[in-house]
Amino acid sequence: MATTTALVTGANKGLGRETVRRLSALGWDVFLAARDPERGGVAVAELAEEGLDVRFVPLDVASDESVEAAADRVKTEVGRLDVLVNNAGVGAPATPPGDTRAASLREVFEVNVLGPVRVTTAFLPLLRNAEQPRIVMVSSGMGSFTVAQDPRWFGLVPPQLGYPASKAALNMITVQYARALDGIRVNAVDPGYTATDLTGHAGFQTVSEGTDAIVRLACLGPDGPTGGFFDREGTVSW
Image (cartoon, rainbow, N blue to C red):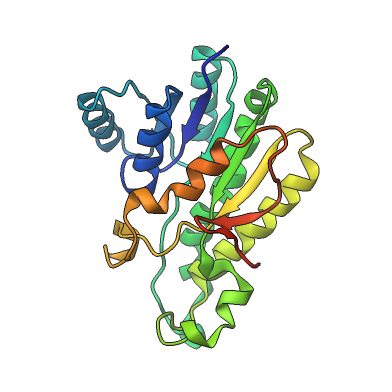
């Protein structure tokens, strides 16, 4: 049986790095993709010290040229991709909606929305070369309309436009891909409030807990769900 191949974007730290670690520990052939070659190389070296053989590939999700070069490299080295984890993401200042300028939304949408589209498009031919291809979109509960309107969260998450809107857009993109990409399981994940750089390490979950749903959906069989939104406990409301 051929080794399962996977690529994880934004993987030099946090949830991405932990996802790479866990998938590699399963015996998979994993590409650790990151924008910064130096940081990516350090992450690969650290994982090697744990006995994990991981490949590094430079990939900036905001650059067409970088994404296409990464896809060409994976094609040359392995010829297919079983699992794509669109993990790369950025936060945005919690500016009140009334004070938010359109220009301030560009970066977060470039990375969190256009990035997964750019990467998915480039890697689709390689995913179609796989027998049971899966795509995991790392979203957030902040992109859930149900969560956004739940009074229990009002004191913790102030109203803001950039990050929640970008993740809500990613959720819709996930659903549309799932409808359109026959034979490819496409799902979104809410990692939960996890202690990473993105949360200022204020989250109450470990990175291992934060990657539980990512890994589970990456390991889906051919009869697994598609077009869904999940956390480590189960289904998340849109």
